[in-house]
Image (cartoon, rainbow, N blue to C red; front, side, top):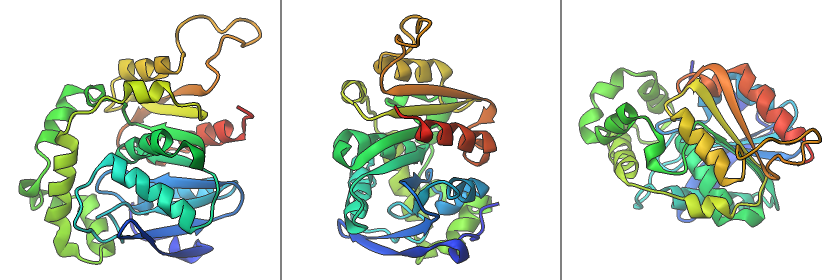
Length: 274
């Protein structure tokens, strides 16, 4: 499901020197740039056929985050803020003035922080199965996050995530380091409510109706943009000016990134004039 299958179709690929990191990127298709950010312990391949589908209408820039995929780790903790800074630096390296940004799970948190920290670089942002505060995850997910760390490295070698990592990583032996740093990140509390309220960039929030993100949290997220407060009225004038919420039926946290319905929803949002 997550083997390497896109390099032949890429119009460009390479390593960008950003913030002391050599960040790997692939570029597919043409049109308005769309940065695609994978989830934790993932890589570009995570989006499967959806990357190809998005590249039919967008210039998709798939990236591997710090310590993920082909991007080697550096002596720096993993943080949503630093990874967001990496995205902004990558755009400058590629000489892209503005891009749309789409992230899933951990990548969704990075996309959100990119919109908060670097709004001048972002045209639209799509946040898939991610939260604006840590309590947005269901309790059992938070419990699982608390178990993430070096001790989980050996058991997780039986998962497709490790199989992908072992094929792509420049140093496969750094698997325990990735899980340790990711575990440290996921254990930290955060609440970006006040920052979200200041976002003026058109934003799409997407979750599954059976996601790891609480449905009530997605509604609260939408509410920070003024959504879900009252009827939109016949002419739609009561809709929030810069945010849409999509809840995909039958979608879980573990399949939403590969569902065709995600591409349909995203393309509709990107094509809108909002």
